[in-house]
Image 1 (tube, rainbow, N blue to C red):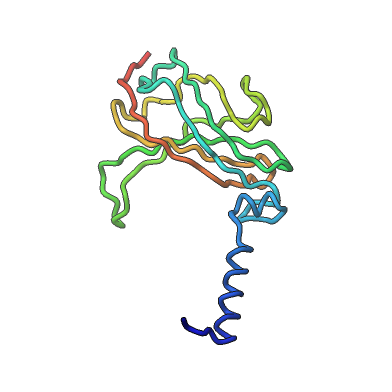
Image 2 (image 1 turned 60 degrees about the vertical axis):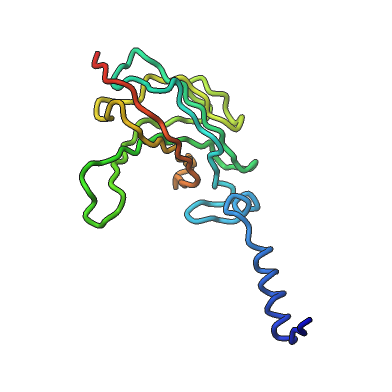
Amino acid sequence: MRNLSSPTLAMLVACGLLTACESAPFDASCAGSAVDLCGPHEYALVGEASVEPPMLPIADFAVNAMVRVELERCPDAPAPHEIELAVLVPDEDPSPDGGVPVRVMSLVTLRDGEDGDTPGDGRVEVEIPNPFIATVPENTDVTLRFTVKSTTPAGCTSGFVEIPYRTGPRRMM
């Protein structure tokens, strides 16, 4: 068994205390700290998200979509949150910097407590007109990104979740 010198032991204890004092951004925000560009209690997380039905047809606005998003908000959040739904589409043109070629298109913003959603219940659950406009490619594997944002004047953007989704055929009406 090896003996640790006092300075080494002191460093290990200090590192342990620092690690224990660090908390996730959400926990820090709920404890009253500013996190990134979010004020105290503003930071929120997206737990789960879904869009149904699968394979929504492109540009068929006679079809509705059911969007469900689970939110984790601080109990003392100063304002409601909104969810920005975007689609990440594979781009066939290679990126000049060697990055992954995708296009990001904003589809819709959903607000907690609006459009028939129950306010402050920890989820946004709404039926909306089909969000897939004609510029979204048909029959394609895409990624849906759900980003939570505070509705305070600064509009703190915090957590997001991405899910795979396959688009349906194009139906121009």
